[in-house]
Length: 302
Image 1 (cartoon, rainbow, N blue to C red):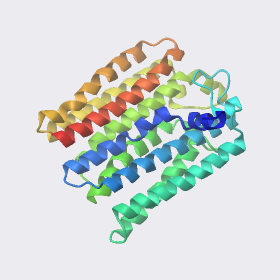
Image 2: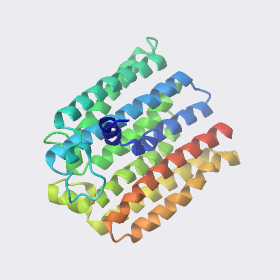
Image 3: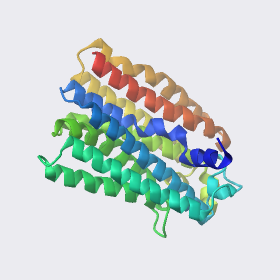
Image 4: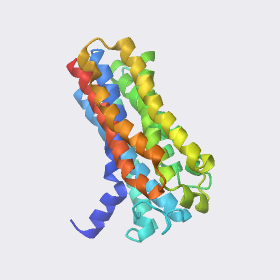
């Protein structure tokens, strides 16, 4: 693998991909438990959400790089544009390519799930696909990038939580179950937690660059409290769902993931050096994926 290819893989931030598919796993497993599942729809939905995530990562690299937010004072790993490994033009072309791929995959999953029989649903979900593309780009790109106004957490909650879980459930069932909103909320809160942790790590450099994330607005101590709310909140709503809906003991497999989540939260609350939050990012993302995987397995096996 040559250096340029390695750079593109680095810009794609492959470690974020397990988190991006967590909502699809949960929504699909809920649909399967309800008696609805289609392997092609599942595969296309997974590929679509991965393409949206890579698009978002490319756009984030470009937007923060162009604004000067990614600089030598930043704690996390060097980005492609910041380090000069990719030019602005190359990244823009990469973003454009991912936009095209994302929309093609979105059309594919919509056609496979709904076809002409449910053409209204097809139009609605294609519109949601376009909205996902716009949201992925506008997080850091442009003069009114919402990530610079402290709204990134809200969009992550909506797209990685509610849309991913409820949307994938609807792809299979063509219906909405109000109870599905609880696991969707859990995934959304944990996904927002990953972004918030990232912003806690970069709080000082972001503030200097004018990137007013929620962590910047809250300050160091209140940002920790908010992080605790996100982690505990996800656990509570998932437990409520489990107590109401679960009958088999195997359904409770997801509780295993509460252990690494609890350890992560303890370390984050005790943290005094933002640099030490960087390894916690990977742990929280993988713990969220583990939770989704165990939740799905418990539904399928139970």
